[in-house]
Length: 115
Image (cartoon, rainbow, N blue to C red; front, side):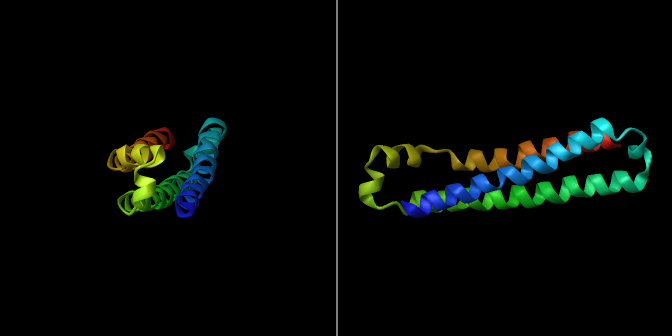
């Protein structure tokens, strides 16, 4: 199951840029003051939020699709193990929906704060 570990590390790697982008935007919203009244600054911050979120959400969704494929292609000895049993029950479709809905809600809230 080495490939499972590789995919897990790849999915975890997307958490850092996601956190950095949204933390930076929240700091800008909190401390920018009058700078956010400038439409060009608003557009730049909104662009970073939207593009960064789309990039991370699509990449993370691709990793979840990889997990679904790995689950379907598990060798029999792994599928019959405790790990395989737990992995086969994972609601990956729900995770994929949450992986798009939650970031979308965050973007909407951040855009409301910017504008």
